[in-house]
Length: 526
Image (cartoon, rainbow, N blue to C red; front, side, top):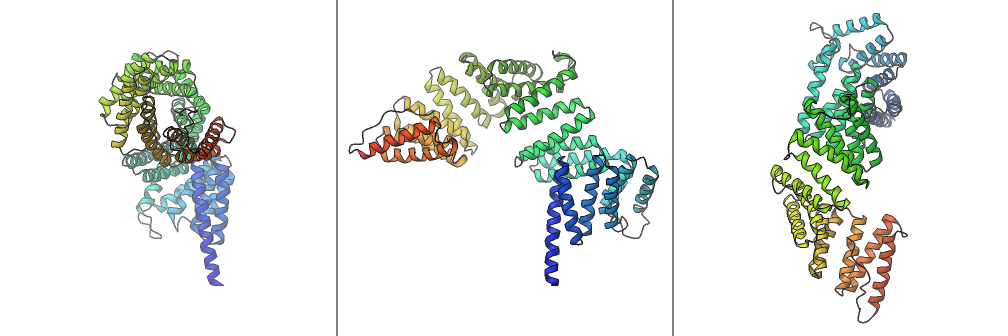
């Protein structure tokens, strides 16, 4: 029975630890209700398993949440229970959070006498002559920081700098750990302003990491809420821009546009005018404004709202040219976007002018074999092809493929270049080369986005080319695979599904005929 009891205690400790860690994440992200539920679970499990340290940690964090929610008496109760579980004289490194929290709560309740008692207890803990339960150097620093709040901002700034260094060295996990420590210190000290700053940095770190973009968005939203409570319009505008970029990356264009426009409105309010006098405005302010306008323009272009996109992008480009110069990469990015807008508006000569300028700037700044140069060539080639220069377009697409290869890339952009090259060969009647290029495109799509509509389209194109070469069985196999994927993605009633089903039926009939005559009914999907 003792063995079972030990195993049960071990399982409960593990359950409590998992609940506490998840609650800590939720707390930092501002998800207080979920954090409270998990902390109560962690407290219960740690009590049954007699894990006093974890119980104290969970109670202290619960107290911080109650304090932030203006439930100060309940917060004091949690902190006192934490100190009862692990007294400061036994383990100051665990008790420090409860000590800091109880001071915050007492101050909010106006009970300064109790504050003085706790501060006296902390002073005794860091007394170098103290013999009972020696305090580690790290804990001593935290306790001294607790008594000297003026150094708090310096301590957190130091952690932010260390985190930034870790992230620059591609040690993002290490950077996030440091930022979480900074966040906990800010929350324990009750510094709402610093909480907002660290929340924003955590959002940026998770965005760089790329594995949990939802968490990146959560942190930025908490930062926005804090800056709104503080009335800090400058920080609000920057945070809204970051939120907009995250939403745009997730395909939430309507929400992204709302965030960008809110950021733009705040920036205009801070400037005191809708007109920007660039020579009289700080460069950082103009750069932020231009970046916001550029993002709004990109969203409008994606939505097909070309006139508003053109207006925003043109305004952004004018600002960037004035403060950054014609060869800056940010200028090149806006020129690229303007080129795409003019292309979609049918103004191909102007589109060509902007896209060429963007490509030249990127080649000069990044070198001829950078991915951004390849992307510029892709966009430029599409316009050149529309201007009936198929040879020039083919050369640009071919060059973009070589750049992607040099970088070890296998992306949908590379597959698109292969598809476009195949289309040029098909136009010239070179079906053999077209078929080989479509196969290369499909191999990439299968590796990058298996089961997607883009794979279905490639299989459909292969089926058409196989049929035109008289390879009916190969065509039928490709068409069936295309149909299966299309139906799975968009359903059997979608026009693409109906077209592919008709192709399958025609190919089945052709396969049944002795001479397998070519069908010749349908064209390629670009």
